[in-house]
Image 1 (cartoon, rainbow, N blue to C red):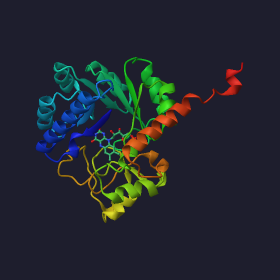
Image 2: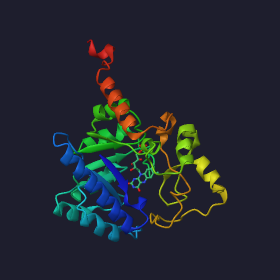
Image 3: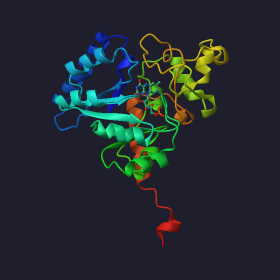
Image 4: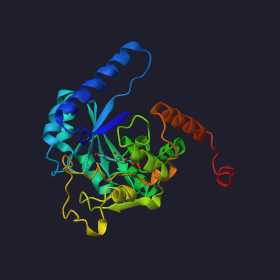
Length: 284
Ligand SMILES: Cc1cc2nc3c(=O)[nH]c(=O)nc-3n(C[C@H](O)[C@H](O)[C@H](O)COP(=O)(O)O)c2cc1C
């Protein structure tokens, strides 16, 4: 299933037209391929109080009855109540177990664990630790995010206790991604050491590609850092000029067509299904 942050559309009119296009193309595909499954689609809504476009975005999301909404950075309760009215589902991004408990109380349908090394506003906790911690009190749908690039990692996430893998950075290095071609090349060329995890731009810690900051002519040492959380990215250049990537950047070697990447993920996942258990334990 695919998702995009509503921030990716600069205006609500554009959001409206993207949602119209996605819904109608999926409907056309479903009509032409009645035997094939058709995934729903999602949008990401930042529900932090600093997001001044949240209410206007919600109006458009409601108009299109978006089937799946991913919330982050705040209390998702209002969005959950609204999306449930049309039978949609809400998954919430969390970086800590106490955030997951609050989201569950707010009635979310699923949890997305955003761990250390993820692209965007990454967490700081190791995936092994956090998945197991959250699985102690949540047996509902669980997605894992953070440096998942390939089918082996997807299988590992499943074994750890996740139901879904959630990927961001890897999909930016695809032919279809509508980003600056230099961003794609930077993803192919960069290593983990090229990242900086900083709250300078939004007041929330986020992984950025250092070469993109240099390319924008910005010297971080002299840059006026945000002193409070400000996720109102409408007019900001935090995502336009400073490019984000997670630790998975080290594993990105090629810009691929999306369909090829998906096939590669499937093949790797199938391969990972037949990896034998650690012999030393399994034989006993
Ligand atoms: C450039 C970039 C922008 C992102 N913007 C958002 C966003 O607006 N809302 C959101 O919920 N997540 C956002 N994310 C985070 C992704 O939803 C996801 O959690 C993350 O990319 C997963 O980690 P990975 O990049 O290591 O695969 C962004 C990630 C990247 C790389």
